[in-house]
Image 1 (cartoon, rainbow, N blue to C red):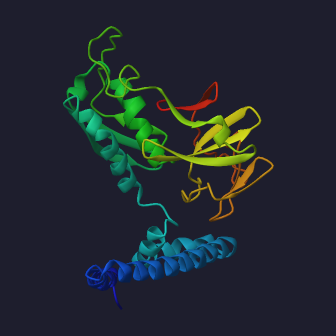
Image 2: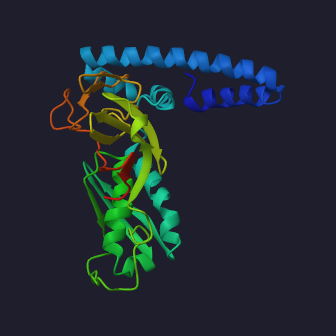
Image 3: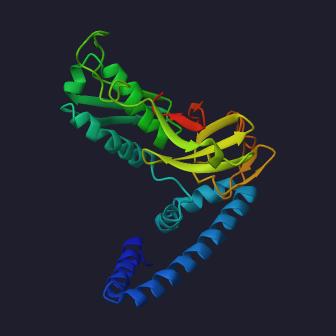
Length: 278
């Protein structure tokens, strides 16, 4: 049986050949590739939807196959492994920590919802390390891993809190704007959604009259983007798997006790701001 590595090698071989073609030829090849991928993604999305209705156990078993998982991951129909997502979040905050001569490392992921990290260098003993953890590290991890509810610094058992200390967190509002303008109010369609990017994160904004709400552009099921989903009566339906959410509250109407990750919104005049740091 052909394994995943052999499939990847064959794809890489053809991509190397195409890279030598002239631009017009490459455009044709890329267009064909994009069309085929779109067809495959739609077929896989429908297959997953049918399997979910018939047998979740069969779907879970199918995803344990490395080739099936790799293809679903490529089409963004499943999430990457949680440890990989945690490491991505840590890479995101690492430059800010290094600017203060600090760093961070993952100690452990403790299922189902806890991550242990270790702050390194000046960040380990900084009086503002609690702020660094809650406003920078924890928020980044939760943005990438909605299932995580606890982020613990294993070496911060004796943090001294000094409100007047000259040492500040690299994520402190003193050096980073708390509110970021993301749109003008007229850009937001009434009873519709608008997708925006904020510090590399995709967000959806919803307006109903004067009320504006903001959520991460990710379904709680498999993190599929929501922005192309149908919006009707203040309810958005995930285009990938049919999960529905109340856009005023973030509540999931398909699965109990689940909700979209929300972000505070402030309107000043005609400008819409989203809070960057919780």
